[in-house]
Image 1 (spheres, rainbow, N blue to C red):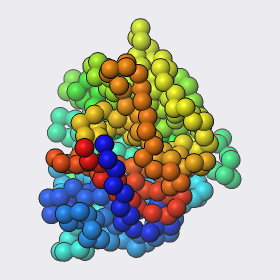
Image 2 (cartoon, rainbow, N blue to C red):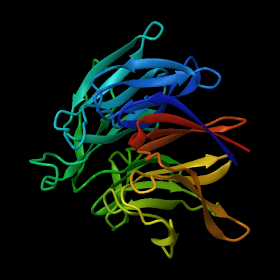
Image 3 (cartoon, rainbow, N blue to C red):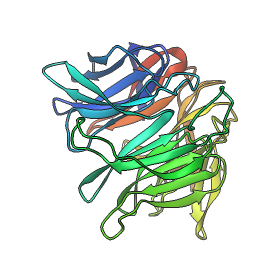
Image 4 (cartoon, one colour):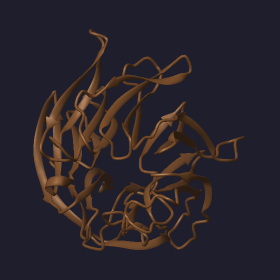
Length: 345
């Protein structure tokens, strides 16, 4: 594979990397966790910039609403470092041209990650708070929670949140996954890794299953060796120095691989395909600040890794899979840039 790097935006504390549909095109999106903008890029090579907002910033995540082109939810007012008691969820909707209506629909302190899960044609909101309150940066005495509800059809309707899980200390990581045919979320905290399944059919309640019992910062799930079973890739402990892959063996997940570089502050772990090959993309915000990938080599029956870029310190990535190439959308936070890596055969 060949990686072609193209910078798209200079953005202080560029943190969120996502995608949005605009004029029927899937477009890369970037937003800052500091004070500042959220923007995306359209066109043949994503060179046309569109600004959604210029303030306030503090954006952790942006998630497009299934079935509603040009509408999304996003976190605002989650500022570093953990100055997030005023964090909110906003509902964005495209209007005429490049005008966007942004409405605050939830005030939820310390909301860090969230998702929209579809089950039986119903959109469900799932939100994860890093903690519930803080007296200072290192105060973790009031753990985070998981909140859920049916997603309203419009931003004018209320969110009827319920707490479906609590006591989640350092509730940091989240990943969307299709688990045995169902849309699901995986969350992480000091207690481990938990699978979260929305109500579906004859199962009217949220279902929760623990997958790992080790302190975990971030997670992704992928059948990397194509044996029909999802593997878990994790970063541990909180903002930790270890990136590892776990495989289900004899009914439980066991570590089968560890990325060879021990580096403080791993932050990216993303499940995807690159040119059709199942891949975990990883990244670290300190040390060599690498962006890299891990794949399974069938011929040698072993994991292989390759550095894509270094000295960039990514915070989050997303993937756009196209017919003739793939695009890694990377928020290279530590150098303040939103970057696209075009992946070609």
